[in-house]
Image (cartoon, rainbow, N blue to C red; front, side, top):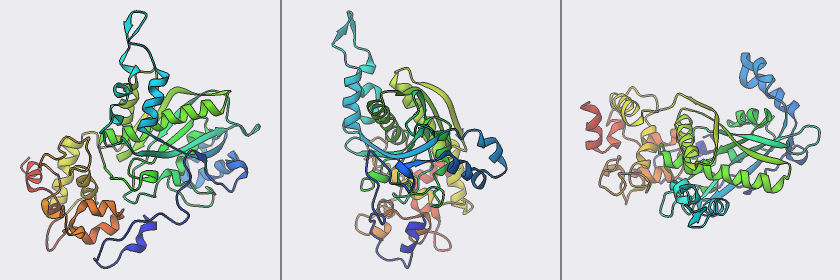
Length: 380
């Protein structure tokens, strides 16, 4: 992240992680904007198409139908568990039949049960609202939702909810989410737990429950807020989902979580690209073998993945089983410079991680790994 590069220097004490200048946007409020009433005119959005999409711009222009307003949305498992059971309440029997499983939050959202990785934490994200360009009010009727997933960054403030005040002049890598919103869907871009509002908490990576808990409670929160604020607008249960790479993996996980709600939600479009959908077999083997040979382009990937699978996430099966992915040498409880968990906690950028990692000529990137874990892949 450019915001973190200034910290890169000689290998010394890990840099401290502090809030960015200006802090974070406020939860569940419209994000401050240079535009009147926070509403980005569709003409501004149309003008952004060509620089972003180049030759494909002509095909995209027809999607821009509405103005857009950005707000930050936040919630917790506790809040959404309570809301779920309030909305789906039933007695022990209804018409002589037992309550269905969806009456209980633990069945609908198992990733939000007490004791889970997500419980007691704050999910945050960006919600982009389609606004009628004539009335300057939210569009009326039943409006579909889009969950627009993005690859996460190791720096916890490089997130969608840090939407800039002027999207036309301030470069922002999550800007593409504005187009499904301008096409007429409420568009949600989750920050992912450990990032954004949850920046002081433990981070994880490439775990299904992580992405499910980061998105579905926000979708339910958005639906509740939209319908309470707008008597003529309802967030429909039609959901589009999309993501590429890590975000493609997240899209598949969230798609499954939507099905688990068992509450008439409909997948109208699920787009997945470049995703590690066979993570535990094909992608893991290929990546680790290539890292061992020194031919993988981003060996820092091991830092984030290893942290997520080294007893930092209570939802992961190997937690506290003596089967951590990272070697004991790089889980040093005394020397933070040799503790992968501390690198991630410090929010090191991929560039900043390199000085702390073992690497040629004195070692190998895969020296980070538990030797028993590494041998599984090398012997295959």
